[in-house]
Image 1 (cartoon, helix red, strand yellow):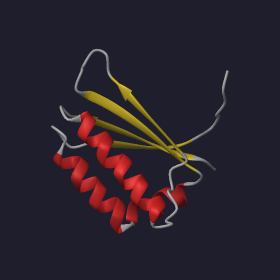
Image 2 (cartoon, one colour):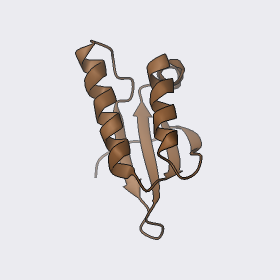
Image 3 (cartoon, helix red, strand yellow):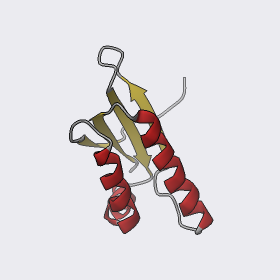
Image 4 (tube, one colour):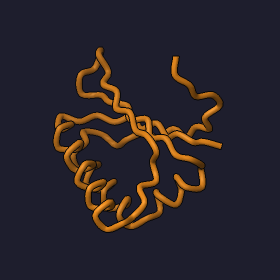
Length: 101
């Protein structure tokens, strides 16, 4: 079953966070490592300009957990947390339906 994690966070340094993520993905590709997420969507809260929601989709819960446990992801998470103004909140979701309209 496909799986998604919603990450609710706040930052005043979103551009730096995006750059870290892009560097992480480029390095993984250069090293031939598989990037576990199959899709990511970044949402910005209109009512609270420094609040963001990231929806990260995986092929399965197991792939998501293996990704979370990797040393590279752990290091990226620490770097992203350092750029946040509060600790992120995580919501784990099984995707029940997915489609384009």
